[in-house]
Amino acid sequence: MDYKSNIILKEEVNTSFIVEGTYSSLLKNSDYRIFIEKTYKETHVSRIKRAKDTLKDFN
Image (cartoon, rainbow, N blue to C red):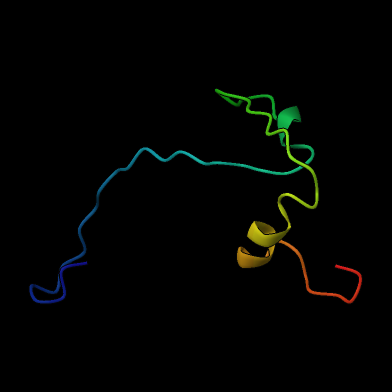
């Protein structure tokens, strides 16, 4: 959108996605599969920062 000229511009963009999670390796059209060998406790801090897990007393 060009607000100054008041016109809508169109641009095509090739997109890529990074999908994570337990079942992401089951995706049929993925180009790469990466397995990260870490435990639940080793990834705890980063999951909290990314709001991947809700904070509960047992976390």
